[in-house]
Image (cartoon, rainbow, N blue to C red; front, side, top):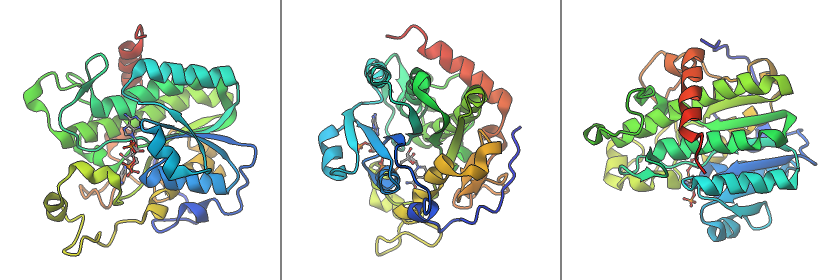
Length: 314
Ligand SMILES: NC(=O)c1ccc[n+]([C@@H]2O[C@H](COP(=O)([O-])OP(=O)(O)OC[C@H]3O[C@@H](n4cnc5c(N)ncnc54)[C@H](OP(=O)(O)O)[C@@H]3O)[C@@H](O)[C@H]2O)c1
Protein backbone atom coordinates (compact mmCIF):
# COMPACT_ATOMS: atom_id res chain seq x y z
CA UNK A 1 0.00 0.00 0.00
CA UNK A 2 1.12 3.53 -0.60
CA UNK A 3 0.87 5.89 2.38
CA UNK A 4 -2.10 8.22 2.57
CA UNK A 5 -0.61 10.97 4.66
CA UNK A 6 -2.29 14.33 4.27
CA UNK A 7 -0.21 17.41 4.88
CA UNK A 8 -1.37 20.91 5.49
CA UNK A 9 -1.12 22.21 1.97
CA UNK A 10 -2.80 25.45 2.99
CA UNK A 11 -5.53 24.67 0.45
CA UNK A 12 -8.69 22.63 0.81
CA UNK A 13 -12.15 21.76 -0.42
CA UNK A 14 -13.07 25.33 -1.35
CA UNK A 15 -9.78 26.43 -2.92
CA UNK A 16 -9.90 27.42 -6.59
CA UNK A 17 -7.45 26.67 -9.37
CA UNK A 18 -6.51 30.34 -9.54
CA UNK A 19 -5.75 30.45 -5.80
CA UNK A 20 -3.64 27.29 -6.00
CA UNK A 21 -1.53 28.76 -8.81
CA UNK A 22 -1.09 32.14 -7.15
CA UNK A 23 2.62 33.02 -7.22
CA UNK A 24 3.53 30.08 -9.49
CA UNK A 25 5.16 31.17 -12.74
CA UNK A 26 4.60 28.75 -15.61
CA UNK A 27 6.07 30.91 -18.39
CA UNK A 28 8.09 28.72 -20.74
CA UNK A 29 6.27 25.58 -19.53
CA UNK A 30 4.30 23.35 -21.88
CA UNK A 31 1.10 21.63 -20.72
CA UNK A 32 -1.09 19.11 -22.55
CA UNK A 33 -4.62 18.83 -21.15
CA UNK A 34 -7.00 16.23 -22.59
CA UNK A 35 -10.59 17.26 -22.00
CA UNK A 36 -9.20 20.77 -21.62
CA UNK A 37 -12.00 22.57 -23.43
CA UNK A 38 -15.00 21.67 -21.23
CA UNK A 39 -16.02 21.67 -17.58
CA UNK A 40 -13.10 21.15 -15.20
CA UNK A 41 -10.56 20.81 -18.00
CA UNK A 42 -11.50 24.21 -19.42
CA UNK A 43 -10.87 25.79 -16.02
CA UNK A 44 -7.55 23.92 -15.74
CA UNK A 45 -6.53 25.26 -19.15
CA UNK A 46 -7.63 28.77 -18.21
CA UNK A 47 -5.71 28.79 -14.91
CA UNK A 48 -2.55 27.19 -16.34
CA UNK A 49 -2.55 29.66 -19.23
CA UNK A 50 -3.09 32.56 -16.82
CA UNK A 51 -0.01 31.38 -14.90
CA UNK A 52 1.96 31.60 -18.15
CA UNK A 53 1.92 28.03 -19.51
CA UNK A 54 1.55 27.21 -23.20
CA UNK A 55 -1.35 24.77 -23.27
CA UNK A 56 -2.26 22.28 -25.98
CA UNK A 57 -5.71 20.71 -25.84
CA UNK A 58 -6.30 17.52 -27.82
CA UNK A 59 -10.05 17.44 -28.53
CA UNK A 60 -12.45 15.09 -30.26
CA UNK A 61 -14.51 18.12 -31.44
CA UNK A 62 -11.72 20.54 -32.35
CA UNK A 63 -14.02 23.22 -33.72
CA UNK A 64 -16.08 23.33 -30.53
CA UNK A 65 -12.85 23.26 -28.50
CA UNK A 66 -11.46 26.25 -30.43
CA UNK A 67 -14.71 28.13 -29.87
CA UNK A 68 -14.56 27.41 -26.12
CA UNK A 69 -10.86 28.24 -25.76
CA UNK A 70 -10.31 31.22 -28.06
CA UNK A 71 -6.62 32.09 -27.78
CA UNK A 72 -6.16 30.46 -24.35
CA UNK A 73 -4.66 27.32 -25.87
CA UNK A 74 -3.89 25.59 -29.11
CA UNK A 75 -6.08 22.67 -30.16
CA UNK A 76 -5.30 19.43 -31.98
CA UNK A 77 -7.84 16.85 -33.10
CA UNK A 78 -7.82 13.65 -31.06
CA UNK A 79 -10.54 11.15 -30.26
CA UNK A 80 -9.24 8.93 -27.46
CA UNK A 81 -11.33 6.00 -28.67
CA UNK A 82 -9.30 6.01 -31.91
CA UNK A 83 -6.04 4.33 -30.90
CA UNK A 84 -4.18 4.80 -34.18
CA UNK A 85 -5.03 8.51 -33.81
CA UNK A 86 -3.58 8.48 -30.29
CA UNK A 87 -0.32 7.12 -31.70
CA UNK A 88 -0.30 9.70 -34.52
CA UNK A 89 -0.97 12.54 -32.10
CA UNK A 90 1.85 11.37 -29.84
CA UNK A 91 4.21 11.01 -32.82
CA UNK A 92 3.45 14.60 -33.88
CA UNK A 93 4.45 15.79 -30.42
CA UNK A 94 7.59 13.65 -30.47
CA UNK A 95 8.49 15.12 -33.86
CA UNK A 96 7.93 18.61 -32.48
CA UNK A 97 10.39 17.72 -29.72
CA UNK A 98 9.20 20.19 -27.12
CA UNK A 99 9.43 18.88 -23.55
CA UNK A 100 6.11 18.39 -21.78
CA UNK A 101 6.08 19.77 -18.24
CA UNK A 102 2.46 18.97 -17.37
CA UNK A 103 0.27 16.25 -18.86
CA UNK A 104 -3.27 16.15 -17.51
CA UNK A 105 -5.28 13.13 -18.64
CA UNK A 106 -8.63 14.74 -17.95
CA UNK A 107 -10.96 13.66 -20.76
CA UNK A 108 -13.89 11.67 -19.53
CA UNK A 109 -17.32 10.21 -20.08
CA UNK A 110 -19.76 9.13 -17.42
CA UNK A 111 -22.21 6.26 -17.21
CA UNK A 112 -22.56 5.78 -20.95
CA UNK A 113 -24.62 2.87 -22.23
CA UNK A 114 -22.48 -0.21 -22.95
CA UNK A 115 -20.17 0.80 -25.81
CA UNK A 116 -17.29 -1.16 -27.26
CA UNK A 117 -14.48 0.73 -28.97
CA UNK A 118 -11.22 -0.18 -30.73
CA UNK A 119 -10.22 -3.80 -30.36
CA UNK A 120 -13.17 -4.74 -28.10
CA UNK A 121 -12.59 -2.35 -25.21
CA UNK A 122 -15.28 -1.07 -22.87
CA UNK A 123 -15.55 2.68 -23.55
CA UNK A 124 -15.06 4.06 -20.01
CA UNK A 125 -11.96 1.93 -19.53
CA UNK A 126 -10.69 2.89 -22.98
CA UNK A 127 -11.12 6.67 -22.58
CA UNK A 128 -10.03 6.88 -18.93
CA UNK A 129 -7.25 4.33 -18.82
CA UNK A 130 -6.19 2.47 -21.98
CA UNK A 131 -5.86 5.54 -24.22
CA UNK A 132 -4.12 7.64 -21.52
CA UNK A 133 -1.78 4.69 -20.87
CA UNK A 134 -0.92 4.56 -24.58
CA UNK A 135 -0.67 8.34 -24.95
CA UNK A 136 1.48 8.81 -21.85
CA UNK A 137 3.84 5.96 -22.67
CA UNK A 138 4.24 7.13 -26.27
CA UNK A 139 5.07 10.61 -24.98
CA UNK A 140 7.67 9.44 -22.44
CA UNK A 141 10.64 10.57 -24.55
CA UNK A 142 9.42 14.19 -24.29
CA UNK A 143 8.24 14.11 -20.67
CA UNK A 144 10.58 16.63 -19.04
CA UNK A 145 12.63 16.18 -15.93
CA UNK A 146 10.45 17.44 -13.09
CA UNK A 147 7.25 16.93 -15.10
CA UNK A 148 3.90 15.99 -13.60
CA UNK A 149 1.37 13.59 -15.11
CA UNK A 150 -2.06 13.92 -13.53
CA UNK A 151 -5.03 11.59 -14.10
CA UNK A 152 -8.62 12.51 -13.30
CA UNK A 153 -9.88 9.71 -11.09
CA UNK A 154 -13.02 9.99 -8.94
CA UNK A 155 -14.56 8.91 -5.66
CA UNK A 156 -16.66 6.75 -7.99
CA UNK A 157 -13.73 4.32 -7.60
CA UNK A 158 -15.76 3.28 -4.51
CA UNK A 159 -18.09 1.48 -6.94
CA UNK A 160 -15.65 -1.04 -8.39
CA UNK A 161 -12.22 -2.56 -8.10
CA UNK A 162 -10.73 -3.77 -11.42
CA UNK A 163 -12.87 -6.61 -12.75
CA UNK A 164 -9.76 -8.70 -13.31
CA UNK A 165 -11.58 -11.59 -14.96
CA UNK A 166 -13.75 -9.46 -17.25
CA UNK A 167 -12.71 -5.78 -17.46
CA UNK A 168 -14.55 -5.23 -20.75
CA UNK A 169 -17.85 -6.79 -19.65
CA UNK A 170 -17.73 -9.60 -22.19
CA UNK A 171 -20.36 -11.09 -19.88
CA UNK A 172 -22.75 -8.48 -21.22
CA UNK A 173 -25.45 -9.12 -18.62
CA UNK A 174 -22.98 -7.90 -15.96
CA UNK A 175 -22.82 -4.47 -17.60
CA UNK A 176 -23.73 -1.66 -15.29
CA UNK A 177 -22.82 1.89 -16.27
CA UNK A 178 -21.84 2.89 -12.73
CA UNK A 179 -19.65 -0.17 -12.30
CA UNK A 180 -18.01 0.58 -15.65
CA UNK A 181 -17.37 4.20 -14.65
CA UNK A 182 -16.14 3.16 -11.20
CA UNK A 183 -13.78 0.48 -12.52
CA UNK A 184 -12.24 2.95 -14.97
CA UNK A 185 -11.60 5.48 -12.19
CA UNK A 186 -9.91 2.79 -10.09
CA UNK A 187 -7.73 2.14 -13.14
CA UNK A 188 -6.77 5.84 -13.31
CA UNK A 189 -5.53 5.75 -9.72
CA UNK A 190 -3.59 2.51 -10.20
CA UNK A 191 -2.06 3.85 -13.41
CA UNK A 192 -0.70 6.84 -11.48
CA UNK A 193 0.96 4.48 -9.00
CA UNK A 194 2.46 2.29 -11.72
CA UNK A 195 3.55 5.25 -13.83
CA UNK A 196 5.14 7.10 -10.94
CA UNK A 197 7.39 4.12 -10.23
CA UNK A 198 8.65 4.39 -13.81
CA UNK A 199 8.97 8.21 -13.86
CA UNK A 200 10.87 8.68 -10.63
CA UNK A 201 14.27 8.11 -12.15
CA UNK A 202 13.75 11.02 -14.57
CA UNK A 203 12.63 13.22 -11.68
CA UNK A 204 9.02 13.28 -12.84
CA UNK A 205 5.91 12.18 -10.96
CA UNK A 206 2.39 10.94 -11.55
CA UNK A 207 -0.69 11.58 -9.45
CA UNK A 208 -4.39 10.73 -9.48
CA UNK A 209 -7.01 13.23 -8.43
CA UNK A 210 -10.58 13.16 -7.23
CA UNK A 211 -11.74 16.66 -8.18
CA UNK A 212 -14.88 16.65 -5.98
CA UNK A 213 -18.50 16.63 -7.12
CA UNK A 214 -19.22 19.32 -9.68
CA UNK A 215 -22.08 19.84 -12.13
CA UNK A 216 -20.57 19.97 -15.64
CA UNK A 217 -21.49 18.62 -19.09
CA UNK A 218 -20.22 15.24 -17.79
CA UNK A 219 -23.68 14.45 -16.41
CA UNK A 220 -25.30 14.70 -19.82
CA UNK A 221 -26.22 11.00 -19.94
CA UNK A 222 -28.10 11.23 -16.66
CA UNK A 223 -31.73 12.40 -16.90
CA UNK A 224 -32.70 15.35 -14.68
CA UNK A 225 -35.11 13.22 -12.65
CA UNK A 226 -32.31 10.77 -11.91
CA UNK A 227 -29.93 13.59 -10.91
CA UNK A 228 -32.68 14.82 -8.57
CA UNK A 229 -33.10 11.33 -7.10
CA UNK A 230 -29.34 11.06 -6.60
CA UNK A 231 -29.37 14.37 -4.70
CA UNK A 232 -27.17 16.14 -7.25
CA UNK A 233 -29.70 18.90 -7.88
CA UNK A 234 -32.45 20.38 -5.73
CA UNK A 235 -35.94 21.44 -6.81
CA UNK A 236 -34.41 24.55 -8.40
CA UNK A 237 -31.78 22.61 -10.37
CA UNK A 238 -29.02 23.75 -8.01
CA UNK A 239 -26.34 21.47 -6.54
CA UNK A 240 -26.47 20.65 -2.81
CA UNK A 241 -23.98 21.69 -0.12
CA UNK A 242 -20.73 19.81 -0.50
CA UNK A 243 -20.64 20.18 -4.29
CA UNK A 244 -17.91 22.39 -5.72
CA UNK A 245 -17.92 25.11 -8.32
CA UNK A 246 -15.99 24.42 -11.54
CA UNK A 247 -13.22 26.76 -10.28
CA UNK A 248 -12.94 24.69 -7.09
CA UNK A 249 -13.23 21.41 -9.01
CA UNK A 250 -10.20 22.26 -11.15
CA UNK A 251 -8.02 23.10 -8.15
CA UNK A 252 -6.75 19.68 -7.04
CA UNK A 253 -5.54 18.73 -10.53
CA UNK A 254 -3.54 21.93 -11.03
CA UNK A 255 -2.27 21.62 -7.46
CA UNK A 256 -1.06 18.07 -8.19
CA UNK A 257 0.52 19.39 -11.39
CA UNK A 258 2.56 22.03 -9.57
CA UNK A 259 2.81 21.55 -5.77
CA UNK A 260 6.37 21.18 -4.49
CA UNK A 261 4.86 19.56 -1.38
CA UNK A 262 4.02 16.46 -3.41
CA UNK A 263 7.60 15.78 -4.51
CA UNK A 264 8.01 13.02 -1.90
CA UNK A 265 4.56 11.51 -2.53
CA UNK A 266 4.69 10.32 -6.13
CA UNK A 267 1.74 8.18 -7.16
CA UNK A 268 -0.56 9.64 -4.51
CA UNK A 269 -4.32 9.79 -4.87
CA UNK A 270 -5.27 13.38 -4.06
CA UNK A 271 -8.45 15.15 -3.04
CA UNK A 272 -9.19 18.70 -1.86
CA UNK A 273 -5.65 19.84 -2.69
CA UNK A 274 -4.01 17.25 -0.48
CA UNK A 275 -3.06 13.59 -0.38
CA UNK A 276 -6.38 11.84 0.29
CA UNK A 277 -7.02 10.12 3.59
CA UNK A 278 -8.06 6.46 3.65
CA UNK A 279 -11.82 6.27 3.06
CA UNK A 280 -13.76 5.66 6.26
CA UNK A 281 -17.21 5.80 4.68
CA UNK A 282 -19.05 4.70 1.54
CA UNK A 283 -20.27 8.27 1.02
CA UNK A 284 -18.70 9.38 -2.27
CA UNK A 285 -19.33 13.03 -1.43
CA UNK A 286 -16.96 12.61 1.54
CA UNK A 287 -14.49 10.59 -0.54
CA UNK A 288 -11.09 9.35 0.53
CA UNK A 289 -9.07 6.48 -0.89
CA UNK A 290 -10.38 2.90 -0.79
CA UNK A 291 -7.65 0.26 -0.31
CA UNK A 292 -7.84 -0.96 -3.91
CA UNK A 293 -6.65 2.38 -5.39
CA UNK A 294 -3.50 2.55 -3.28
CA UNK A 295 -2.36 -1.03 -3.79
CA UNK A 296 1.04 -1.17 -5.51
CA UNK A 297 0.70 -4.88 -6.38
CA UNK A 298 -2.60 -4.19 -8.10
CA UNK A 299 -0.95 -1.28 -9.93
CA UNK A 300 1.70 -3.62 -11.33
CA UNK A 301 -0.92 -6.22 -12.24
CA UNK A 302 -2.90 -3.57 -14.13
CA UNK A 303 0.27 -2.30 -15.80
CA UNK A 304 0.97 -5.81 -17.14
CA UNK A 305 -2.63 -6.32 -18.24
CA UNK A 306 -2.67 -2.97 -20.03
CA UNK A 307 0.72 -3.47 -21.66
CA UNK A 308 -0.52 -6.77 -23.09
CA UNK A 309 -3.73 -5.08 -24.28
CA UNK A 310 -2.00 -2.29 -26.21
CA UNK A 311 1.04 -4.20 -27.46
CA UNK A 312 0.85 -4.97 -31.14
CA UNK A 313 -2.00 -2.57 -31.82
CA UNK A 314 -1.38 -0.25 -34.72
N1 LIG B 1 -17.62 16.65 -12.66
C1 LIG B 1 -17.44 15.85 -11.63
O1 LIG B 1 -18.16 15.90 -10.61
C2 LIG B 1 -16.32 14.86 -11.63
C3 LIG B 1 -16.12 14.07 -10.47
C4 LIG B 1 -15.10 13.14 -10.49
C5 LIG B 1 -14.29 12.98 -11.59
N2 LIG B 1 -14.51 13.75 -12.70
C6 LIG B 1 -13.65 13.54 -13.86
O2 LIG B 1 -13.09 14.75 -14.30
C7 LIG B 1 -12.85 14.72 -15.71
C8 LIG B 1 -13.42 15.97 -16.36
O3 LIG B 1 -14.83 15.92 -16.18
P1 LIG B 1 -15.78 17.18 -16.42
O4 LIG B 1 -16.74 17.17 -15.31
O5 LIG B 1 -14.99 18.38 -16.71
O6 LIG B 1 -16.56 16.68 -17.75
P2 LIG B 1 -16.83 17.36 -19.18
O7 LIG B 1 -17.14 18.81 -19.02
O8 LIG B 1 -17.83 16.49 -19.86
O9 LIG B 1 -15.42 17.24 -19.90
C9 LIG B 1 -14.97 16.01 -20.40
C10 LIG B 1 -14.09 16.28 -21.59
O10 LIG B 1 -13.59 15.02 -22.08
C11 LIG B 1 -13.73 15.03 -23.49
N3 LIG B 1 -13.83 13.68 -24.04
C12 LIG B 1 -14.77 12.72 -23.76
N4 LIG B 1 -14.56 11.63 -24.52
C13 LIG B 1 -13.48 11.90 -25.30
C14 LIG B 1 -12.78 11.18 -26.29
N5 LIG B 1 -13.18 9.96 -26.70
N6 LIG B 1 -11.71 11.76 -26.88
C15 LIG B 1 -11.29 13.00 -26.52
N7 LIG B 1 -11.93 13.74 -25.59
C16 LIG B 1 -13.01 13.20 -24.99
C17 LIG B 1 -15.02 15.81 -23.72
O11 LIG B 1 -15.11 16.20 -25.07
P3 LIG B 1 -16.48 16.80 -25.67
O12 LIG B 1 -16.48 18.24 -25.26
O13 LIG B 1 -16.34 16.58 -27.12
O14 LIG B 1 -17.61 16.02 -25.04
C18 LIG B 1 -14.83 16.95 -22.75
O15 LIG B 1 -13.99 17.94 -23.33
C19 LIG B 1 -13.46 13.41 -16.20
O16 LIG B 1 -12.45 12.45 -16.37
C20 LIG B 1 -14.40 13.02 -15.08
O17 LIG B 1 -14.63 11.63 -15.02
C21 LIG B 1 -15.49 14.69 -12.75
